[in-house]
Length: 488
Image (tube, rainbow, N blue to C red; front, side, top):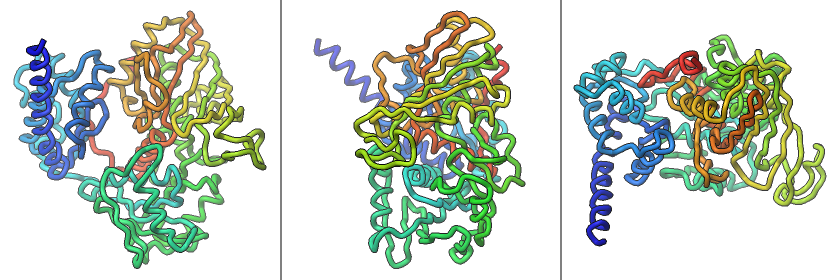
């Protein structure tokens, strides 16, 4: 018995040692080559030994087997010798592709797979783009965390300022504290310092100017050295072109991104679906809603493969700041009742909004929503009538493959665990996660359950749109299969 125990402990210590050896390689690739490494989309930069081992362990939910650190360590070691330029590299997908091709010379495989950036040592054609967060609520603070995490060597998106209305004399300290601590998403991963004299917050080396203003048009960003900035309006106060155009009147602003569904003719962008329609002439665009981002990618691939005749989307959504903690007056129907004590039926425009990104689904979907007493993570239930019949096994296999190898692998995740609940998806970077065990298929009728972190997952989608607007997306390897190839 003791020998089995010793064997388990020895194997664990061997994996720990390899994970420890990976950390400096991951850091060197990131700092010297602008290469971000990940395991099935889960970044490894600035992660602990345990985080790295957990990422490898998570792979069993994808490949049905744990990804051995003994396989990814040689990959990393070989990558450091290729003098790579800026890139995003998924070690799990590379490892799978290497084995599928029969192994062989690892360095030569990697040199061919990453030929576009091999030998370009740290070359990064991206130019930095100044970003201003207008508002600093739930989404604003999560955007700040993500932008700081992705700051790298200063290329790409640079968070330069946040704009808020002053709430109290110690406003700056309180804002910094809310960034530092979060009841849902945990502590900020790093250090934060406050300079009250200059109204700045420094987060992991990113210097953020805090600007107090009640009027977006009157802020002079150039006086803070900010130019051609993208303003991300996460207040929800203005949602049409007239209101959001106030930002463009400010000095130093070139474009605006709204973190909510836009009204009128504004482009509603769901990254992965219609981000290719963004042009340099677009001064104001929107990132749609969290629910629209969660369901549109799944609906897209289902429609491509099976055809959607019609359907209904029921959203089970965590409560938001718009609701009351206890019963009180509210302009909206039912929303005045206590969010912490009730399930509240309310409306959602997400089903109709899907058509703004996927015109082929215009008029095919209805929708409703139930707000429930949880602070984060929601679920969309898709009840669809299909043109072509399918089985539970077929649709799950298809969605799992889509989550792994399609261009939508950053949007769609897949899980098949009998024990997961909503809190397990806090911090998910995907727009939506298909719960395979909950899938119901009856010929041409299909019911899917899609989890989504309506705060963090959505914020990741917003940042992807920002990167598209600023043209700062590094090439990703290995290259994904096309949606058409996966749909067959």
